[in-house]
Amino acid sequence: MERDKAKAVLEAVLFTMGEAVDIGRLMDVIEEDKKTTREILAELKESYERPDSGIELIQLGDSFQLCTKNDYYDYLIKIAKAPRQYTLSDTALETLSIIAYKQPVTKLDVERIRGVNCDHAVNKLVELDLVAEIGRKDAPGRPILFGTTQQFLRSFGIQSLEDLPELSQVQMEEFREQVEREIAADEQIVKTVQI
Image (cartoon, rainbow, N blue to C red; front, side, top):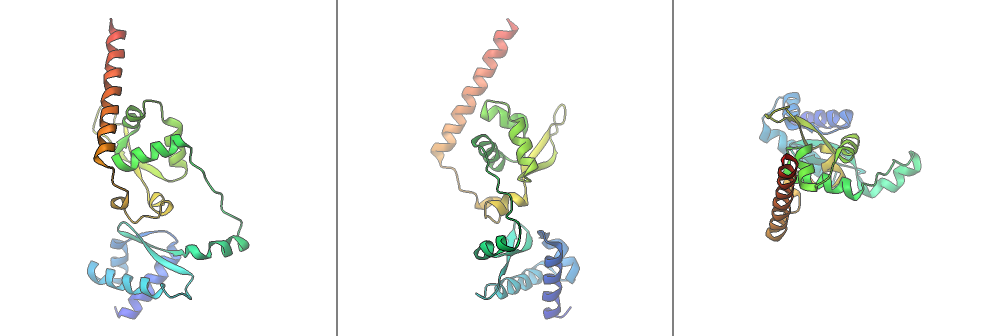
């Protein structure tokens, strides 16, 4: 396919889909290899970087999406009903952080780290499309594994999980000690109940 036509096809597909589209699907549409498809997407992205463009092409992992530039949000709310703003509670944020850094993770794993039930927090995060079921653990009962979504990446303005801030060694050691204390406390409770 001619390069200008391929660029127009990608633009049309991304505009029409309205959500992130995996590069594999984009490659299939224009019948090009990954390298060429990425080059064409880079050209398309560059064309939207002009100051007179109200949209931009963003990358979310290995997917791409056309979005309105943040600079024009105030103008959009004049014409459209203001989108509902969600505020996450500390509990939901803590649960989301654990899922983001430890994924794939079960609800039980999150509860062990937090030390309390997290049903409501996980359900709220699923409702907001920040986390989703990504499979089942190969263990008795086959518990659900949770991970973050593309909406999570969009909401926090990052392209991939590698962009998450790194935890320092001190923080990691504190988390490890906390988990070990909680596991020891759980084991003590089980021994007490058995006696």
